[in-house]
Image 1 (cartoon, rainbow, N blue to C red):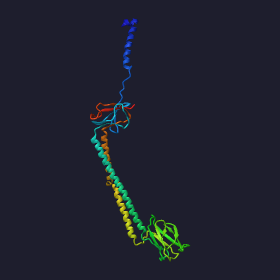
Image 2 (image 1 turned 45 degrees about the vertical axis):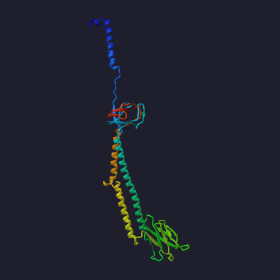
Image 3 (image 1 turned 60 degrees about the horizontal axis):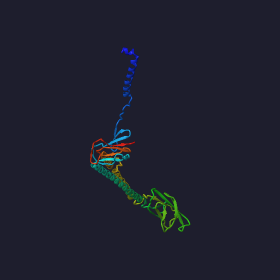
Image 4 (image 1 turned 180 degrees about the vertical axis):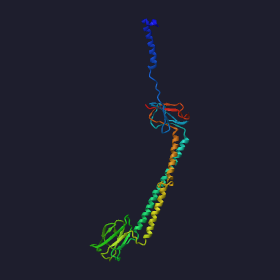
Length: 327
């Protein structure tokens, strides 16, 4: 070694050889790009298909359960759209369960709807009964009472009172150029007037009542008509009938409201609870059926189909059977 350092002609070539060898080893170690392994992400979509993102532009699809293939709807090279059915396992029992559960749900909804319709019909009927009883109460036994304590030649009040307000009509006849020699005005519940005739009833306001004058009344006489007439002999009976109609309406509609779950009681929610239960069974059955179907999670081109993915062949759980390239 000492002789080498004292002999430059031999040392320089040796250093050159060492440098070349070191460079080769260095290139092998650091001259190449490192290998990067992309992480693999696996998920299950809302339809039950197992999706594995093997690369940034490809997805691998698998069934979440083992089974026998019923149909395959695509081939390599086909373009697919998101949501398109690609393959289905033989799932007769699961499909039957979906159909049965859906029928039960529809029946529960129809029963609830039928109760709702019955409630509407009952409400209309009870409303009519209450209104009829109220009109009878307000229209029965109506009579004109003289304000001058002269009950001779009292006019006759007829018709059915149809308005909602209660009160009185105050009738004031006066001498005029009419054939009868009199006209009249009225105020109170309504305001207006007319001509006194002795042959036909005249309208008293616009709520369905009429007034029939009799000949011989004194022109200074006025009358009052009370709505309702609490002094009528039929008033108490009609008032009781009206109160009974109101009570019956409340009872009938309360029962229907209970069946529809509108009063908050536990028994009242039977119909809605039946719907909720049927909907839960249907959703569970549908979820179980979806495990037998592979659906494209995104648009793309079919780049791979497993050789065993054929009608009648068996597939294993979570095994990639279809790949889609998205770019």
